[in-house]
Each structure stands twice: as C-alpha cells, then as structure tokens.
Amino acid sequence: MQEIELHGEVQAGRPLLVVALHEEGVHLRRHGLPLLVCGPGKVNAALAVSRMLAGTRPSEVINLGTAGSLRDGLRGTHQVGRVSQHDFDEKAIFELTGIEYGEPLGLGEGPVLTTGDTFVADSATRARLAEQADLVDMEGYAIASAAAAFGVPVRLVKHVSDDGDEQAARSWSESVEACAVLLSDWLAENVEA
Image (cartoon, rainbow, N blue to C red):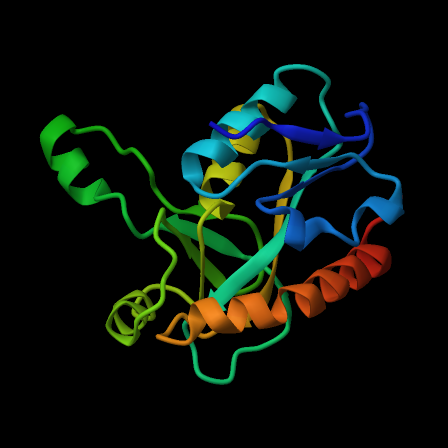
C-alpha cells in the first residue's frame, strides 16, 4: 500500500492541493501551498483526502491533474463543472436498496468529468463514456466526495493529457511534464498562495 505523501502543512484558511501522482505535481510545490500526493485510483484518493480533512480544515481542496479527453478536439486546462463515476452502477444499487448512492456531484460551470478505477485506453470505452462526459480520470469523484463529506469546498482542475484511446498510455507519458507546467500556471493565475 502506498504511503500518503504530504508536502507542507495543512492550514486552516489556506487551500490544500491534491494530485494523484508525483509527475502531476512536480511544479506545484513552488507555490508554497500544502500538496498531497494521494496515489492513483478512487480508494487511495478518498482515504488520503479524508485523512487530511479529519485534521485541520483547509479553505478548499483543489485537485489538479491530468485527464483523458472523451471529445475530439477538447484540449487545455478545465475546471470541472460536474463529476460522476463510470464504474459504479448507481441505478442497480437504488433498485436494490431504494437509497441513492454515488450520484453525480455538481461543482459549477465547466465540462463533465467521469471517474473510474480504469485507465481508459481504448476507443470503444472512450465512445461509451463520451455519451455521459467530456473528460475521464481516476480520482476526481473520490476527492470531491471526500471534500463534500467534510463540508470543504472543492475544485477539480484537469489538463488534457491524452485522448483515452489506444495511444493514451504513450501520450500521457510524453505529455505529463508539459501538463504539470500548465497546471502550475493555472494555479498561479487562479489561486492566492
């Protein structure tokens, strides 16, 4: 199991930055804000963020990271407006229990992100997910859910690293450094340190 890695100290009244992988956050530490590297996937993300929020309450949680594009031509850095899970069957669970679990979370204006514990790297999955979302990642929904559970505002900011197709792994590896720089630029322009 991966250790939770925190750079800096979570402080009341200041944002907490969260990334899944070191590669995504390599340029964020220069901003002087606490940076949590949670590890890939929903379980790692939910556990790490919950552990941090059980202590000192930051002013907000900002998840910065990469995402696959589910739309041809969708590029750049985006603040997510809504996030869902693509690997959780909320309709079947509701039919079984009569209780809604895992419903999509509204975060404001912006594209729709869908989260799942699968690195999307095939055109068929991309096409299926494109019916419900614009972007895909592996941590956003879990981070937003953990923040909501603790009553902490959250922003999900994603830079498109790949197209979620058969070239996704190579594209991510080749673009993650440039994505990390652009995420750092977004932070400098949109968040006071």
